Figure 1: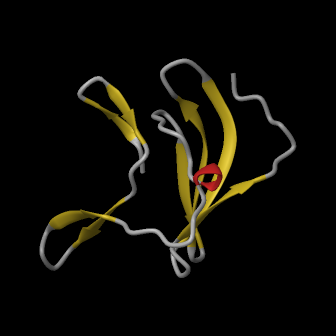
Figure 2: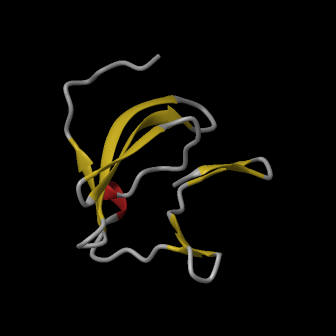
Length: 88
């Protein structure tokens, strides 16, 4: 997810197919813009059960203190409400 390429931060989610050795953009469903993570790099990401969790990172102007979950079964993003941990 995300990263930094050619001078810009990204917020795309890619998946790798080991049979074809190719990357493809992961399609999402029923996700509103407010629930999709903003562009970022330097974030933490982990897999927990059927979900990808993304925490913090940097964008062009800010240190980000947010948390998002991507449900791999439902294929949608959700912004989590957290206890305002400051990562700066």
